[in-house]
Image (tube, rainbow, N blue to C red):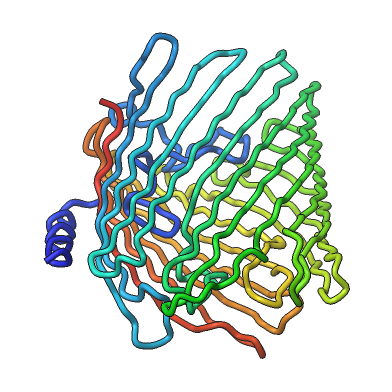
Length: 432
């Protein structure tokens, strides 16, 4: 009966269109289709950045504070819940995501606080249910016209998706973990020169998994704290072109271990140079090229290094169509036994079409290539997405999201190959 009720809800909601997502779910976005301009060049406006006063949620003013309550409710179906190569098991689900943000606007000291609860419940597979949350706090202090300081704190509890290569396949339920972190940055502007320094600390703590028979699956070897320091210097040649150099160092400390596999402590760095630019009224973007290296302390582990590339290009085909491509190559941590980490290359391409002022259709694909260190394994992971967002009013938006994910793994220690399809619909409410 529970599955029948959820499928009835899916059928009734699918009559209305709706947006984008990450693990692609119709509750993502929480009523907003805006995206932050990450280029610093704003002569052109993309489809997702365009202001829509008639459909933009308005906060509730409480004295000097701005309160924005949001609620996203969605339902969907996943046809390969456990990401298996064969004998796929599917299930319907219901997802509820309440969120509240509180902002104290000020030209000198802006304060913000937001929290979100993410409740995911499956119709038949209760073991896959999850209760996630996140809490974020931030402050921006504008010292002068040339100097500013930003501080952000974050904490949250999450469940690892079954489609992740780091998820143990023999676990009876998804692995849970907590994340705590803080970031501080300082920026100084002098004529055409902008200097920025960033310090970030993050701690991840994974809970042990358990097999269907009740045996523990060790995940303590993944617990670690990362420290990263970054410096960026940017010089504006013109209003449409700036050159920059960037460098960062990091240290990743793992929990001490007494077993046969030592802790994967490492130190690394990145060095790069690049530019951010506008190409007339047709495109804007940024590109960073350089080198990265991660040195693992245990002699049994191989170091990981390679060519660094990060970039983003937005092409304004028309005023109603924006095509965006990104590339990002970096070293990531992993939960795969025997591997130090992996060199990840992510490439995305997405098109956003403003069919109506309040109806946005999007489609795109993503390829993630993972080359694992210390073991013979390479993964190619594809994600194809199609979505729509229909803005009913300032307070209400309808969403539809379709997604297909696949993984092909090769090497002596290859992982599993699988395909997974997901469809979801949702409605979000913002403000009062």
